[in-house]
Length: 250
Image 1 (tube, rainbow, N blue to C red):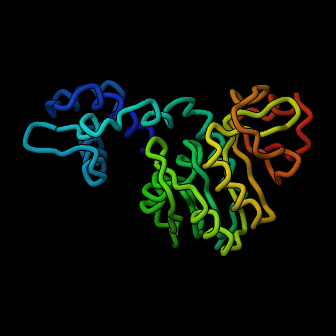
Image 2: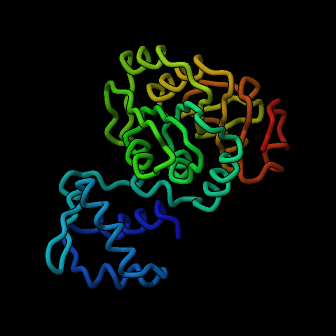
């Protein structure tokens, strides 16, 4: 099981109550063929992120008290197989020493853990920053600041957008909440979408990620068109090719 999926599995269990006995947690993850050694390593990472505290024989889940336990915590485990396919395909589009803007989203989170070439990353996502710092191939890891949206741990606003205007990227990688039949790309949050627009204005190679459940659907905020994208990476190209999206589909 992938590291991101393991941690989400732990969070799904831990967020049910503020205190857990360690042996109960280890028994739970063993059902998914996760060893005690691996689970303890993942738990240590959660402790370093101030999500839990561990003591002899037990775990306190701090997220319950901070009201940070929500469906977003487990987002990357939803359709994880699809996200993994997309992330692996995306690796083939990377080049050594790319300077990449990586947007907000669970598929992007899976991708940064798999990067296998030396690259530099700029992001407005605190989650992306945390995951990328553990990948030794990410040689340069920058978080663009501004106002913060607590739910997604993403930064937005004029300060964030102006900072991006100073950087020239080789690639921008971003994801869609939904894509309609005409190729309109939708996001669920306007402020976060505007940050990605600022990055897209600074690049030639624009890579859109969308799993096969995202197509033929309207959304909240229409912010881009697939015809302006260099590549659309998806788990099932045959699904995307049913529509007139006017883009190279991988």
